[in-house]
Length: 298
Length: 98
Image 1 (cartoon, each protein chain N blue to C red):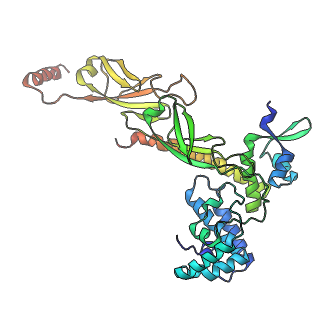
Image 2 (image 1 turned 45 degrees about the vertical axis):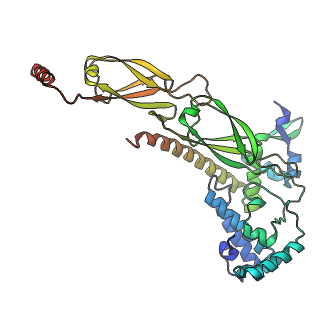
Image 3 (image 1 turned 90 degrees about the horizontal axis):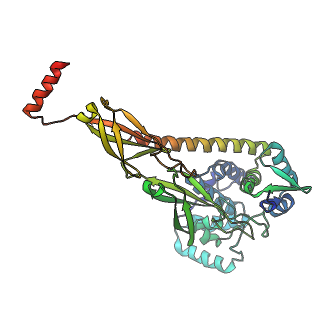
């Protein structure tokens, strides 16, 4: 449990007036409000802190209590006394108002100890219906996992959710699952669950959108004379004709052999092959002689 | 059009403790779309999440209607830029570890 200096958090002095506290809170809230900083965990944390600081310092009774015991945090004995006393006097319900971005459960241990986890709100009435908190989760998958649509059971906050992962989902993409977030308050709708996909790629292919890229080694003779080679695609091997006199770094596009297009069943991107021509090494005397003959012909 | 996907504005205002004029102003500026069904004003459930955000910005941060419009436009731009950044990061991987 870390001691939080609420005055420092709001950037005000210990003698600050209510008006100064309110003004400092408003200023910081405008900067760090979760609605203005989506997906910013640092801002979310900061907002919780300033919200907590404001909850305490804007209430004269709580501020007095905080001033009395908060600064003597290191004197555990005194604090424990205060805590016990506070616990017996605590008349507040733990079921306060909750809305997205700043929920009671996110208040610090320090706040819980000092004020029993109660949340005070002057604006909303207890009967106001509110949407539950939105949850954010990350799902780590391999590239192979998202080549085909499949179902997966996720456990989020002890709830099992059957999720269909559509083929072609992108790394970093976020999908919303309606109503699978926190429970609604006073009969309000449940929050939503936002799942961010983290896709790692351990294959020989590189992915850019729906297209796949791969390098294929080609021996000198096939590159000069042409021929047929077997190459790997994501779905298996295919035969590919090589044109005579194929140059190093030539790119060939295999239509429809790339990655599935998200939510467009049966549609695929392309596979782009880049040829790396490998020159023979450790030539024997006969090979050198033949190359010299070829050289004379040019 | 399924009416069960629409929520009566009056009900919404009483649940969120907001004045109907606030919702009207949001509609006028184009931040939400109000549907009239049988002379009653409704909002589609898909817009509720945005509306809640607007209520929070207005009440918690004292942002006026024009400010909310600016905030939403900037957030939309930020979202598009983040998506673009994500796409570019994924493309950049093509040239990494070569």
